[in-house]
Image (cartoon, rainbow, N blue to C red; front, side):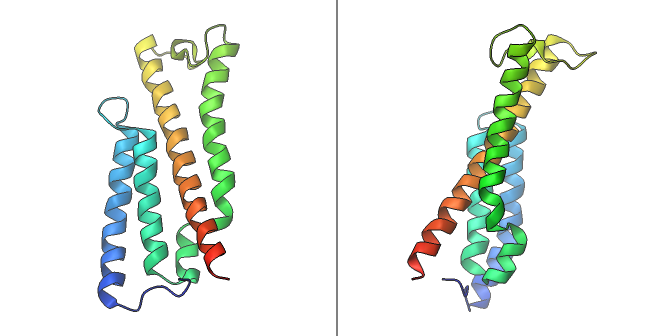
Length: 145
């Protein structure tokens, strides 16, 4: 599976559809605090678009889109973003993930709540995307014996 597809239809469709899946995944992440969806759903969509490229393209090409060595570090960064927002709220004298105590001056508690949820959604989306792609890469490595 490391050689990719030889079908021009699969190559063309994967290259055309994948950016739209990524765009919609980012939309779901950024509007997760206003509408249904959020970090997990958007991260799964981003991972699906990357896995689609991994299935269709050659290894040297799809590694340029998302290097497999970055999977675990980016997943850890997503978890740190999530935990960091909660820890900052906790250190500010509130509860874990108490967004109104985020130290961003000049904003109302409602604005701070929106920023806090947005940061949480970004962290979860990054973690989910990275871990799902890493799981796919690990499963692929085990099958290429």
